[in-house]
Length: 376
View: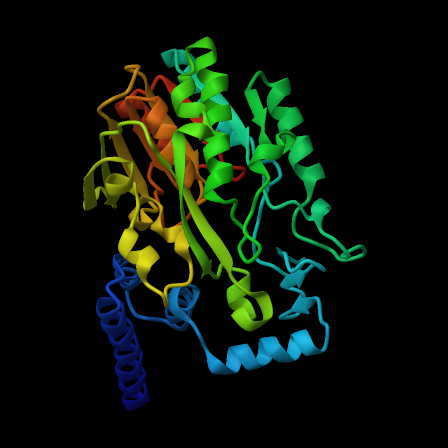
């Protein structure tokens, strides 16, 4: 029995070392960080290895067998992949199905939000709850009768409860300019997040909104055609799903920013310069075998993100509480404030006390763009 355990240890460690080596060879710091964070949890269990393998697949998989599988599904005309985990409409747009592990809302989801609101009120901090424009299955073509993961009625009930308790709510689902999402991924595009940041800033700043920052005419497009294979497309391969173009809006006006990413309160990366230098991982975008170009935003930062805007027209500080939808949003939202902190409250990101963080940082505004429980 002891020898069996030793063998399991050896093979598990060899597997993890291979992934670490691959991450270094591919020069992917975000993947390297995720592997190290999984190893911090101790013995490389089956679950840990599966999580690391998923991270690798989402970035680099170009598996011959996967593409054979996807091609066969396409030839059969199947709309569903992997036991209805992914469903594709007639124009090739992919959605999470009812078997997806993705959770959008909790019941009740508002207790932690109200705790933050109560503390913010006592400190004179403005709070805005933002309902993200999730990829809406109501727009799906030819999927009538399929049970999809997006459930608008759950969001409606949650927002009504928040408004009843006096929370200022911005429902981005009402604005067509933020509805653009990737075909092969569940995220909105950077273009949508740009428009979302303008709407959020407009709600908070009112007549003081800098029109130069909010106007898309003052940005140029940086596009990588046919380069992105997202979290949905990766489950079927790019022969089945095709690839998305990946486009960032880059300011044409002067910008000077400093960005730091922290994991467990330790500095993970620091970047300074204009918008592109501070926020965009160009090496990742230029890497032809890296699938999920979304990770180029904020250089793959996913836990505690601290941004200083040296050319801000205001001295206000903002705090954004959001999942990965906040990654490109934080880039654009930071242009409106002198300082922005973006924290992802999901497990494995920033899981310390948010109330303690607010007490220490003392922002002028808090934007909550997260529908689940926030660690208090």
